[in-house]
Length: 314
Ligand code: SF4
Image (cartoon, rainbow, N blue to C red; front, side, top):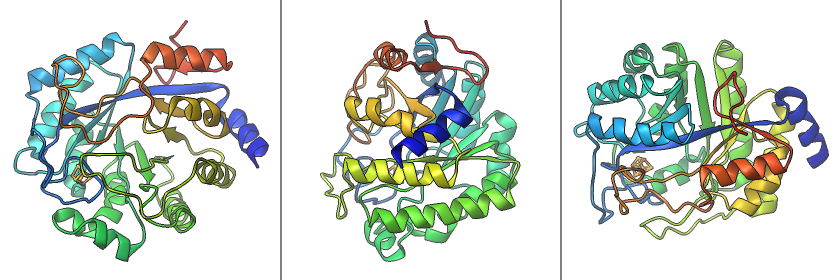
């Protein structure tokens, strides 16, 4: 299965890996997600960047070579309203070729508003498709609304978002169940919104401020199995693997199906250029610099790609 997955990935994507960076804008959050360091009960310093600070963080990432950025916030419509998101997208669009967002679920018109401002990608993980588990790990806050989150990808696709990333937080419930439901969700969206590019990610629970323990930990072997099975089921769908995973593991498994990876990531707002060290969403496992990640890819015979159409690392 590993060999078949590797072959399929090379056939449709070649030996290239697209690199992107996450950019945290705010760690304010009104939700109580049991697994997340930003949850409203966490005793962390809350920060929301001004648009000038967003531009400084973006400038730092641009100097590292990134052309793709993923802009993230917690969920607080009061502190981080859609108007702020729009200004941030406009600011980032002046600096990067591609701006994706990972923010609280929006209404269709709100997604349209951000698409018009320049956002071309959305990441929205259901976290778990298993409703009783979903209710347990989301004890309060707007995120408790399972259905509103489930239908967010569809609202974004209808609003014209070009790329949409789906996933589950591995460790919350049985990975086999999650994998099957994720595949069903993806199949439905691919059929209905054929003009949108859908992607999958495979985040596993990492230590956060909450010290949350995964009830259904997913082993490395099971992670590989899930990636390979989904690669064979969806040969043309891009897959992402983040710095939540250790460097050695990322180096081993990316050829089996992965097409984009984050690098040099920091998970708190202001962590790149503003000297902020606390208030992280979760701990990063692959702490290599962008250059080190690129070197590993090149050593394995792959090309790190910073833009869709240009290979720019040598
Ligand atoms: S996962 Fe998102 S919504 Fe939940 S506490 Fe963390 S930032 Fe807030």
